[in-house]
Length: 178
Image (cartoon, rainbow, N blue to C red; front, side, top):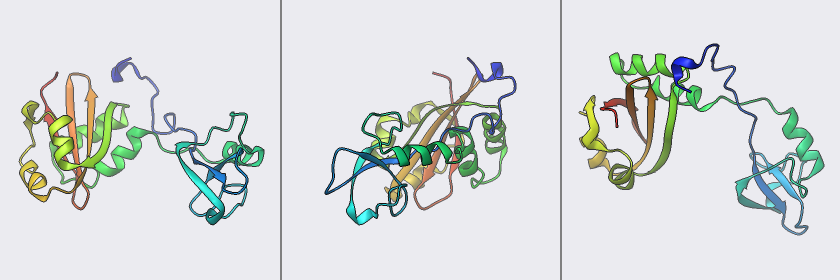
């Protein structure tokens, strides 16, 4: 499906169920709970929890029944297009930013959005040789060598690459199609 096929697509229709990190009570393993900022949804304090690097799955046999109920009641969250739209709004105004914002409101495909060390992202994911517009700020990002967010968005025949420096304003570039 291309973004032009997405009749009726909206940020509201693209919302996703809330997700929570999985955890277990350290002294009572075997039951997975859903982690919030400082406790499991069912009330176990964070100090008594072992946190895992995967999401809580309410349908899993080992899931805490109370956490599963509370996850089902949790409000949905913005989809990837809406989250990126909110970040791109902080970029300097210009035609590329406006075009990308409009594309995201239409459901453009966010094929990649990752964060990591600038040198790694530039070497493996940015494909700097394909950037044909808006790439002037890249040199400053390379010099800063901090953590970076990088998003690749395709809308119709247009491809955008968004650079999101850890401590700076995002900027939008356009790449020639692959």
